[in-house]
Image (cartoon, rainbow, N blue to C red; front, top):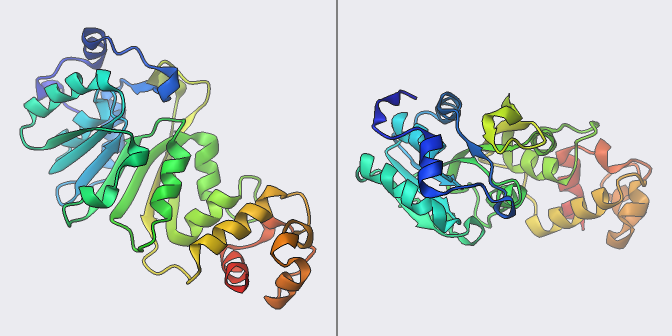
Length: 275
């Protein structure tokens, strides 16, 4: 991002506002504006959608999104200490940044859209990232309000999101993501890019909604995947015993001796529809 936005360096912002990252909030601030610019560009074009950012902190990614042409950014920040720093960015980009002081887990993202498309771009706090993704993947109405998710996760979580059947990372999150979206890892981010540096590498994941996923009752699919992967080392006839076990599996043509990680998304959908 060009340094001509008139705002001070992020380290100076953090010092001026006393923004020592809080472990309790899962905060790891991105200070490299070249990196935040690279993340923002993955979600282009930004001028035709409302861009929602979760956990902006001192605003490094926020600045990049605005510099890359975002028409409107809605920044959701739980930490009240960060609001003053975000207001400085809002003053520099009049009318283009709305600041919502709230816990993202309690926010109605549909209400933020203004009736138009939404792109969610965020360096998600590690402690709520997976739950937020599940919320975005499982609304009652589909297609969702968002047209893309460009998100940072711990690399291990990112690998679970995009995992294919038969791989070590394949699990419940992989099935739900594969059912309702197309997901890919764009690039990794070194711990050195953060303050404080986390103990793990991070990855940028991008998801776009599958406009017509195979029909299935969401609650049943969640129940089947939870049971199957809750005892992933056991054969399905055992792990799915509370849901019908061998009879259920046989009814949809799945070998009861198979294990959860070998089933495709379509096979999980068939099981959910048969429960």
